[in-house]
Image (cartoon, rainbow, N blue to C red):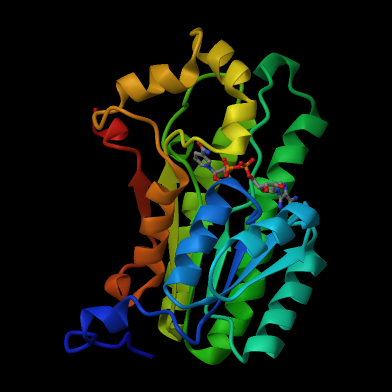
Length: 268
Ligand SMILES: NC(=O)c1ccc[n+]([C@@H]2O[C@H](COP(=O)([O-])OP(=O)(O)OC[C@H]3O[C@@H](n4cnc5c(N)ncnc54)[C@H](O)[C@@H]3O)[C@@H](O)[C@H]2O)c1
């Protein structure tokens, strides 16, 4: 199957996701909610899937467009299969799957237990595998679809201390995404990773003190903002707009790459 040549498709149509069904894991808050908001604005029917079902319901109710909420644990293989089935049955297709749910607990490496390690890898890596597989099997049958995997600037290097497990998973997500692009491309399915720098979300705000300790500063958000060529840390919509680009026809010939959303940080 060859990717369609979209040269004659009007710009508005390239960005129009009407009739497409999208899943965003970890969609109740932070980056996931921001991504869900833009996908719904572009016309997609969006499922915000989050382990915090009440927060997902609240997020869905607060957004305009066709937005559903699902209580869902991204560390559970069967939950991904059930969600993929539900969306395909309800919407007639599964077009966009964003593996966004992730955690970043701080633990010095010499104190890191096997349990600490597996808690992070179970969600940030195994969860991305489960989601990618559930989405890919349906998308290959359809002959189209886009999988987006949330990596990080920590997928390129060590971004401060105490998150070795996190750094390992975010590197791995980039490699997995390349393999998906290679294997699924001939079936019309694209895969793209996204690598944000520090973004102000409920998760990073609640861990500000931990992040600061890892960096040896008082306010990590301010300190990182000063390092970034565009002179601030990110907001969720900085990432959401890039995800919208990635899943839209604008990026119809982009697959396997990881897009840095870091205000120029890694250009240094
Ligand atoms: N915020 C940043 O600075 C930043 C930078 C780079 C990458 N990222 C990545 O972006 C993603 C989202 O980060 P965020 O800052 O928005 O996080 P956040 O903590 O603000 O929100 C994460 C959401 O995921 C949900 N979640 C947690 N465990 C889950 C599970 N097992 N199943 C389903 N949902 C679950 C939480 O309930 C929450 O709603 C993560 O993969 C993170 O690693 C974040």
